[in-house]
Image (cartoon, rainbow, N blue to C red):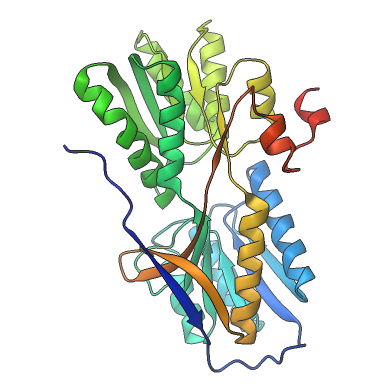
Length: 334
């Protein structure tokens, strides 16, 4: 197998005007926000940021939480559409099942923005996220700078989330040349059923029960990393490098304690601001000039706004998540 593999994107400048809108400029926009769950700290922050940004632009957000049930999320979408929301923002439970949400919205002449997670195989209108291939690259690059040789384990995200595959591609872009040279051996490589601490713990237990000598574990997110660290502590394994993603408060505290090597901070407030602006302009049929990338979701090239993640480690905590106002110094270092 040849690596690296890169996500195919194109840059272009887009000016759009959507016809058929009923809203006048001063009318209040109603944005329907369909969240898969509030099972992580970061999703609460995403919700709060989006509500704040939409409010600043003169709109309101109606939030529905699906508790990780794709059928529930479709039902909630139909309810929001029936109640007359002007645009939908969706964090899909399932990358494929959520195509039905887009189809239902389009029947009602409502546009859909996929937030953070791409909805596949449908005529999706817009996508706002971070470049998850780049984030996987960041995780692997940082660990291999510290440990350029040894045994590596990869514990991926949920199989029903497109981001899991993108993170994996980014990781393999970095790791594969080292594997081919014989410097690194990938001794464990599994995706999970969901992005949870218990999944991270179960996979790490399986790895460690095989009596494997592991030097580094790349976890798809911080919840998985917490489970990994719990399993390592139970086995008295010290010095294993652990990467995560999301900059969750407990994980930042683990970084301070020297138990986690790094995490990735996504600029959630900027993502929410871009989504809010796009949603309000779509609802009001206002012109929007922006530089988009395009990402194929299997059915079309979806206009996409990408943001860059950044490595967070013990040395740069204050210059990243704390200076950005995402977490407070008092909480991180308490």
